[in-house]
Length: 215
Image 1 (cartoon, rainbow, N blue to C red):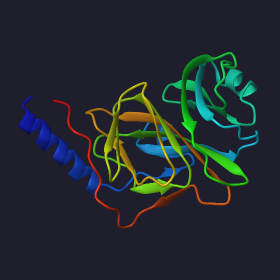
Image 2: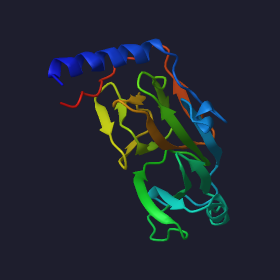
Image 3: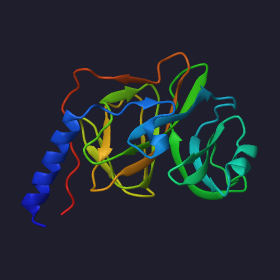
Image 4: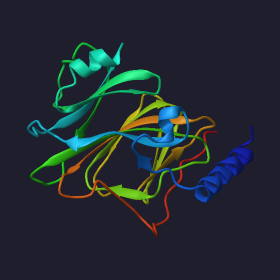
């Protein structure tokens, strides 16, 4: 495929994403039924002490029952993208609760606050769809399960493939979208001050830097 054709396809994909409604996160979104969507798997206070540095640990389990039994107050057990996951906010630990350790992501720079909350998300976007341009009041961590993820910010873009992760600091303006020809499937974590909203959509965002097409 020629470089010019790849550039044209990239531009057309960006235009298509701009025309479609943004995919917002909700409880029991269409993502739970294999369609485009973003599901809030959990949104609740953190119970444990915030010992810096903190990390997001992802472990796979054979069953939801096994993951739920060892989840603890700061862990979320859920089925997503064809697997059972335990997603826990902890210090850097070698304990994987009996599961298969997939990743630990961080460190997570916590915002100033007296009480903290965690929101865990599972999303599936097809080419031509995108999230709103938005910010978060705390750090956001991403783990790409399948497909290719593009995170666009005013300063630069981040391209992630399967098994890769990224942490965006609090306040960074960004938009997520697939950058490949197939659906992208992602797990995400927001940590935030419980006294503040977790996210804010921008009605008049600045220009964002798109991901480059692979040559």
